[in-house]
Image 1 (cartoon, rainbow, N blue to C red):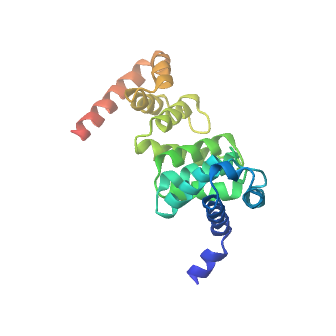
Image 2 (tube, helix red, strand yellow; image 1 turned 180 degrees about the vertical axis):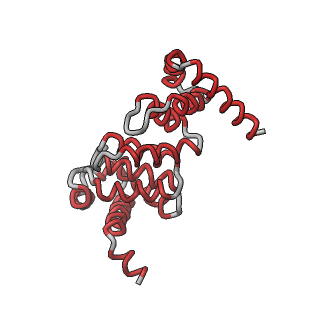
Image 3 (cartoon, one colour; image 1 turned 30 degrees about the vertical axis):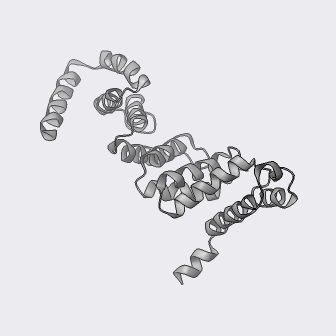
Length: 212
């Protein structure tokens, strides 16, 4: 039954379509591809608009790697479809792939879902989910997620305003060379009260001791 459900899933049918395109690509060299009506028909049927041979080949590569458990390929293919870059936009299929990568603990996919929920791009805006995905990614060391989380706490945007948490996460991002985090840290530090600076110093010291 599990195999039957997989075969019937829209994602499986979609990825199978990419495999069909790859077979067509393999049957003709690049010079003939643009003139091959069967190749063009396969592209138009699957994606709704013509793809270049390069893009179709790239998608096939991501598909093969995704089937092998490569979450980076799953994330990249999902993002291409969700944003509609170089392919006809398919938010449903793209979202399923992005969630698969994020639930598999891929930090970039988690960070990306955070931004999607924060901005409400294709999904209802949800600050709680945005904070949650940013936090999961930030814990894995993604500098962009650490910056986003710190900025979220500093501005009180979609999360409770917390200067101390903001400083800690912006510091982590800055330590990895994140340009925007390095630019915002001095501004945040100027806004801290004497008491906040004291508490922050204690928390940073505790973190240092726990890492030793």
